[in-house]
Image 1 (cartoon, rainbow, N blue to C red):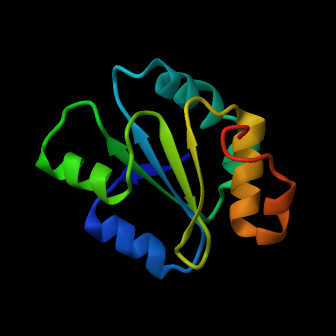
Image 2: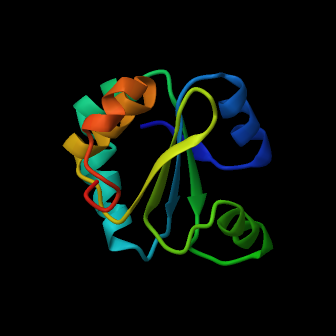
Length: 126
């Protein structure tokens, strides 16, 4: 997936497109993050489901004022955390921990089509 670094500019651009988007919070020391990068984000089904969406990433490897402010704004405590936003720019789901390709694909599809959201398991299950 084509992740770009989170900034106020990339966040506003993602919202202004009126398309679903994703923010991923990751760190170099995070093993589940590495597994998602290798397995989930490279899976062709995930790439296809995410086509046309924006993907932003926040690198939590080194704490600094800017990163801490972003974590506070989005109420993120650890990595990996992935936040899914609908076309309306509102968060509709977040996951904490590893998410495999099939579940991630379903979350992307549900980000595009809100009618699919009720069929997904509750947070924690996905």
